[in-house]
Length: 117
Image 1 (tube, rainbow, N blue to C red):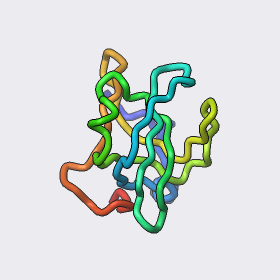
Image 2: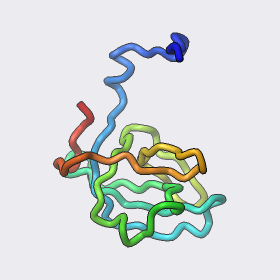
Image 3: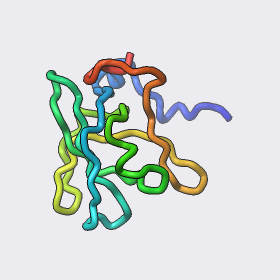
Image 4: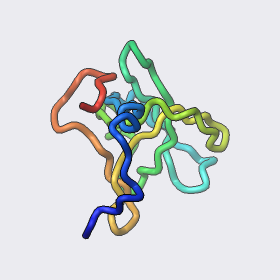
């Protein structure tokens, strides 16, 4: 399939996006969410700190297995109100054909706050 040139961005645009590694320090139920989700608190190290995110990853992940796991997130989007919480980062993943989300994560441990190279 040919690449759609209307979606091409410049290198300077990509450099603006802060994609960082963080470690999940808590994963709580989010009963007020319209679709099943967790409220994650993710530690991005001393430069960024701990940020909160609403994540619709309940199909494949139990709360207990998320704590201590490193995740890839965008940390410089503006905060977004999602129900009663303010989501401060976007934890990334990939949709499977059945709609479940598989988290993006590093192959090996890296320091919290590291930016995508």
